[in-house]
Length: 560
Image (cartoon, rainbow, N blue to C red):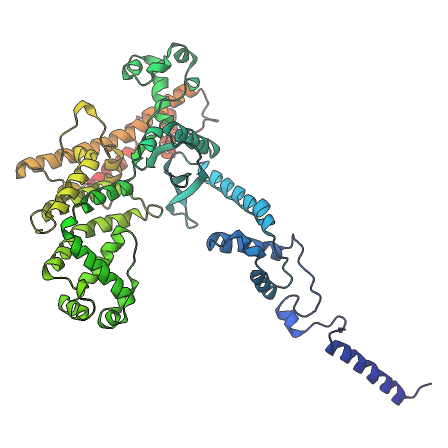
């Protein structure tokens, strides 16, 4: 039997041999994990067991790559096959199985798209009415459609929401008929074909043609109307005026519940006004050129940077309104100091007192337009349609005052004013600041929704009438005009609210459904539907509703 010393010596040789194998990388201690292995999964052993494809950690990393890197950071799909990215992911988590680009494009992205589309449909399903903005990019042939609605927050408050329905390739000719057909397919797919109140587009002729108000297809009308209707005369107003009784009711309800009203894009129209005005700045071309040179020098020259405000290094560059910010920043400097800095190498950039005066006037004229443009950029976070009327009238007042105070920019002011009054003629007509058009022609921005939304906005209510509605009348005549306009606006809103009850009453009468399984029509507010059911049970008058009393109270309190 071996002695104790012999056993110890044998064990020492065995342990030393094992140690040498480990040191040379040819062995390992079974079941033993290093400290690093506890901190980073898989780092404590040379052979790492990868996550299964269904493992929660594997799926979480895949989702993070797609949502945060590919979508959030707009990185290319090929990043998943980049060796450096794979090396980075191996250091981050050695157990992660690298995702192939084919997996990303064939299954992951389509599944994420389908989930997003389904979520949008679930959000829109209970909505009774929505609005749409759409545009088409001719140079790249893409048709984009965005829906706007109101959704609840986690706290129960309501907030505006903008959801992208489609941004798809649009090949072929961009005719109004083809745009309308593609648009109808998108609405049908998302279940909002009969829920659209307004469609906002730019002023291109093909977009105007695509979204003219159209009567519903004959198949949706009662059989008797279908047999008697003449399709060629569908836009003849006299044809519909001759329909009486039940047939006429069907037509009226169909129009109210499925027609779509196209509205011009306020931001685009405002840019057209500004574009018209900027054409009249030729006499100030030298001053504008020097301002451009100064802006470049202020960003790139250390000499200018040392002698001027460092905050100018943050000036934005790009669109015209951002160039106005540059101009205002330059004008915030001292002219004398600026000329001294330009002396000796940059003499061509030094503005003369006359040119400085020209730039100052131009900045004063364009700054309100720049501020109005900024407001239009927050349409997905706040309601902006109520800003249209006050903004247009305030810009008009600003230009009328500027006509008598400017010396160098009079052509710019006159052109801006004329373009504003022409492109927003409907606003001025509705506010009784312009004569009505001949032949009852529909003018731009003449829809009553602009007036209604402004009056129902507590920030404006009826106060803007006393501030910006100005005519050539004497003081008494202007006062009568303003008071008459206020009365008209209140009557308009109350009539509009009452019209919902009339539409709903007709829909219920022709719907044939019982109270138990009755569905709220898509164009009728849920509040009005509730009061209508209450009226049917109690026999109360439609016009004597809480909604009407709320409007009267609103006018009495908010508009005083």
